[in-house]
Length: 533
Ligand code: G4P
Image (cartoon, rainbow, N blue to C red; front, side, top):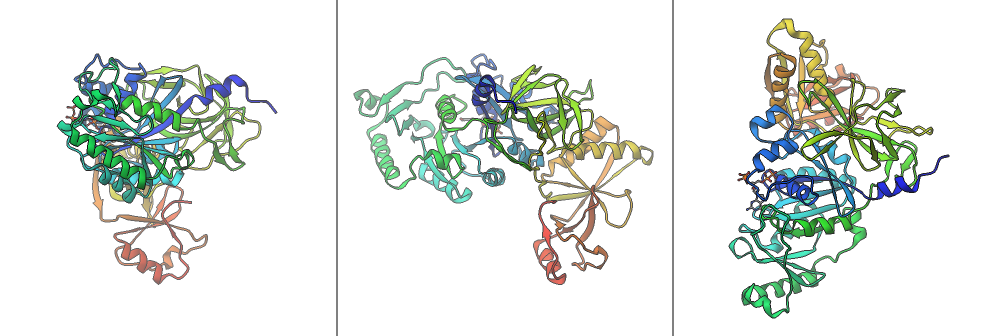
């Protein structure tokens, strides 16, 4: 058996791949841009004025995103900082989001949660957070917008602990907020990093760090602020959780940082600590046991996202894969487990801030996008190892909104079916059929309602098909866990609907949880599951 070379091991060790999550407007885009700025990947020319344009150039691809100024698809950005090679997996920043977001989290080794200091934990964060906890990956918290009026610090920490059920450990502590914001106190070095708005958007300028006992401190913070800080620190030292790397690594303790991404304050401090506290790429479960990137010498990867028509001129389809072990070389032949054949990975790409560029080499922990002639599905495994294995599948998340969809022009049935199937393969939508009829009626299920707009837009623009969509009242979907079941005989509530998925598996749509319970009561032994098997 071949050995993992020292060179490849070193390359993998310096990779850090994380997802960035937040509620819309908490400052995720701004923070991402500041990370890229520190990594030298973008030059904002000393101003955040260019943000609107930079934002589109950096992470938004689809036309609909440009029109609405929101990020619909999750993108991947790479930059280097302090000897590390960092991949940021961006997740959509609007209220509605798709399964794509959840899947992106499956490709990350840790997550950074951005919270607006004036708002605390908001709905979207809660939902995304569930996926992080499910995977037990480390979660880091950046409490942003300290230059604006913020909630009380203890209240913010309590909020995270209560809402998300995770202990917190503030690495630094804010002094005031809004107009009174003076900086953060580093609990380890016992120094205060002085807030200054002067280098908005640029990396130039050192942050001043002054010991709390330094006489110069008195001109920087008021005696009341100092007293309040000392009191709060004493309280926190006495009652709060202590930093424990092991708990952080297991996702049970979230290190918390305070800052202001807009003014660049606290961003580099966060980045430095974050890199020290996160691990290099983690092992992944497969049907042959855990595959450890620090031991497995051969290339292996799994597909976590597929996106068609990223470049309209080329009508291309890109499969994004997370490399789990070994070294990737452009044009290499690998075995596609689900397709049961060898494939050549051509046109490998990485996103480097503004541009996509062709990569020659990539390593475990990295993310690449490869040209997909339509053979890959989400969750597929690729491996160069002689000892073949499949990575654990990516769960299908239950859609919460449903609509009946049909094409307006009956002559365009073929394009319609092709388009809707391709979009479903990407994972943005799930499609179902009536249980007893043919393919005539298509029911679309989505996790976030915005995906309906995306579907309509894409069918019109990419497949030239106009559609009509009628919303359905269902909110819950359940797959049937029983091997043998006669769906005809199943008695549910009158508002229940029987459908089947693309693989022909029967499932039920419900309007409310009461109907689910009733159906279960009426059919003894019936097993209903939230995820497809
Ligand atoms: P998102 O990706 O999480 O949705 O948030 P985004 O970074 O787009 O930030 C949302 C708004 O909050 C932006 O203002 C941004 O400038 C502002 N913001 C981000 N970080 C901070 C911060 O630390 N302090 C303050 N005061 N504001 C912050 P906008 O007016 O919506 O956009 P723009 O006109 O600045 O582009």
